[in-house]
Image 1 (cartoon, rainbow, N blue to C red):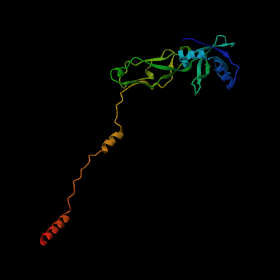
Image 2: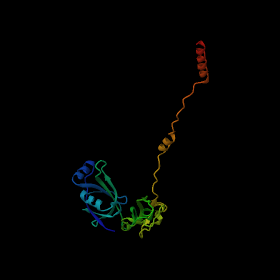
Image 3: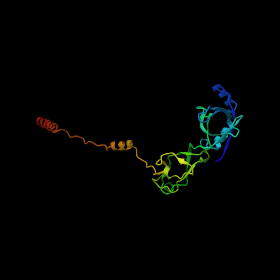
Image 4: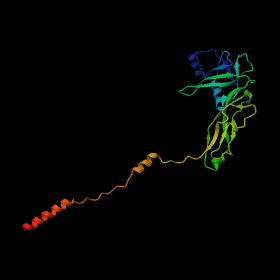
Length: 234
């Protein structure tokens, strides 16, 4: 594994106002934790950390902290525990590190990357669905893989790749459920007619043209009788 070095300084400034002052001066307040011991307060250059953020996936790489005036002259191997962001500006405002032992196994999340083009997508018109983007593994810090590549080229429509199907590097033990789906080729979505449209069409009935009603029989007889009387008078 590539060894990343990051220079830092011990930090005596404490409190939110001092932390704000550090950030205004181009530093990031940080803390290093190690096996229940007292946390070590440090500060590091913001520009240097941002450079690492853009070049690496910090959650799964070992960072060797070289702290000025530190008793551990060789540095402290660490993993990033947490990166805190400002809720408004979304800028990094604080970083927590976990110091680790290179001889003790640790648990980390490693990203999953699909390799190739699935048959079910290329020839059958399906779509590749990435269900699990990270897998938790246990291994020595020096064996942490940068990512896990999964070949999907033989995957047909309706088929899936499970955690149990993936071949992991030696010394790397997956901790997720072996039956968990990682990648899946789904059938294309069919366009469905909205129920409201179908109901509206069912309600549209042809207009019935009513015939003109004839005069009742009693009315016709009365008219004939009146006509007869007029004739007799003449």
